[in-house]
Amino acid sequence: MKEPNPKCYTIYSKSGCINCVKVKQLLKDNNTIFEVIDCDEYLIENKEEFLDFMKQLIGYEYRMFPMVFESGKFIGGFNETNKYVTDNNNNNNKSISFDSDF
Image 1: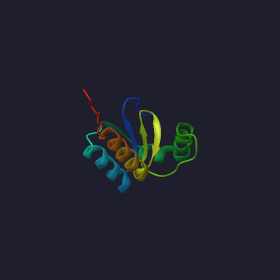
Image 2: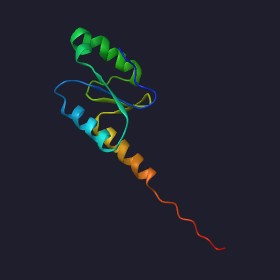
Image 3: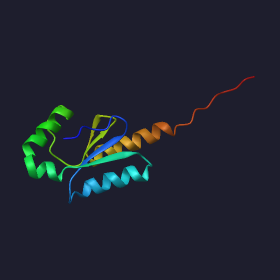
Image 4: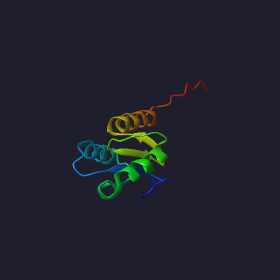
């Protein structure tokens, strides 16, 4: 099983998952680099092993898709990622004003 990319977003995704599609579109719309790991094979071959692997990465049991990481840090699913991206964009777009009394 593949660990999250330490240099960009990583989306653990599965077929038929509407929130997986939504989180990919969210990151595309924000010009964000991400890697997708398709989990269908993991779930078919050994679901419990996959879930144990994710529990080790995340630090607690998480059984919903997508599972999104940013630079190796677990963010959550679509809603958490949407908030995380929005908050980061707002922080990056804040303007700084300087008073000048020269």
